[in-house]
Length: 512
Image (cartoon, rainbow, N blue to C red; front, side, top):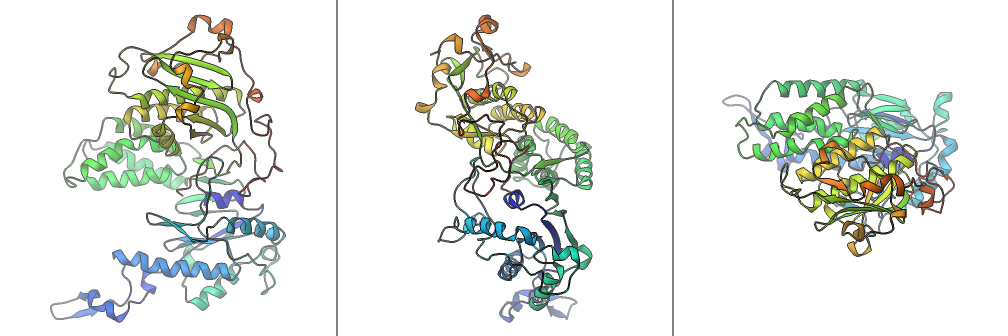
């Protein structure tokens, strides 16, 4: 959904429709009737001849029909269109934008492997390759059908005539197919609409959590705090709400690990009330503050190129932590006892601190909202950061610090981490005590209070005399340009070149 919204031409509109009694419109084959007998009285039995709500197979049965319906809409030239269970969205573009948008869709179609769709768990998607931030390029259709101009197919208003199709065109085909819409839930074409429980704004290219949902989720937290122990269903209900909110508040994923631990423990005895992990209380207070914001919103604009300052981080148990930005460097000692003080820690925790310190060194010299690339040779840190969380509690705490730093400085979702082999990591030397010239020292970084018992700057005595501020244009390698300079004409592989090159206050979530 984020890829779609990010790439739509200006002026596009969205409508949302809900199928009425979706499962009940699907008749069962007579061979299945013996499994659908319901006892009404002592002597009366009836057969439920339609797919039942709550029955496991019903979702897949209706899903196959709904998928076919979407394909028929696409084949008729309408779209983009897709669905989640029985909720459908229809997007229409201006007739004046049709040619260019079809060219983009055609380029996407060429990225769909001849082997067809891919499957991950219960999700089917199309596409091949990775976006600039390393995320997979995923589409919900293969873009094999071009959009068509249906504006002259029937009488319509002057406003509707500007677009490729209208709701009458949708009704004409759905009536023929026998798709019953629940008209009371219709959201007519406009520039914003709720879908999947989130508000999508096509003009601003943002996704937000509706205020009524934010209020409901706050109430769920208050209800949770009223009890000290909880059974499995209570944990599941709160976790599901906050997981949904994390689609708009990605930093919240690092604040769900305590509830995830509670879930795994409660599965053993689902009806036994249990105390949650200690971290849950602080995490829920963080969530309460976030959900109290007047606007809970993030951008879905995808940067087609990242600012590359040649930034690397590394850590070693022998000396400490090192970072490099271009030819510049800085290093910190790991203080004695760091492995056990305040809880057990490992090298992944130290690598995560290097990751934090590298980001803290970079963002003061970049324009707010600049998407940038950093490198790390620890796969746990790289993989965890892409999920906004770590299974390691100590590493996850550093991720929380980093996410808060990025949010506070206007870089939400802007740090993109890539793996580099240790032998190619220039920060390996400083982390092991092999230091370049002091004239190349990066400016000092303020060490958070929570980390001052664990690390110390290796060169605190000479910071003011030897370190100098650095200019990001000295290190940016993307076309050799200043990282704040957008280049809309710069070609890219996925069609996002009409958007900002580096600057976009937000990040794509391909899980939506």
